[in-house]
Image (cartoon, rainbow, N blue to C red):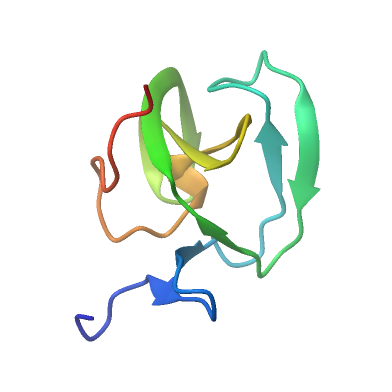
Length: 95
């Protein structure tokens, strides 16, 4: 792993990324704010990113983007709230 990288491997070997400090983040059923809220991630959360897809453009602490991160089956968070170390895609696009 590169020093200073925001990603960390969890005990089960899955790479996780931190949510922006001081933010609780809505997890949605699809890639946009029009989708239902599935749950809310508390401040200090870390999430895996299994794949990414384009969706609604939103703004957050890490800029403005239309990239949404799939963190579980049917669960998405806006990439602008996740510290990935990149403004672009860091995982495969969701099918």
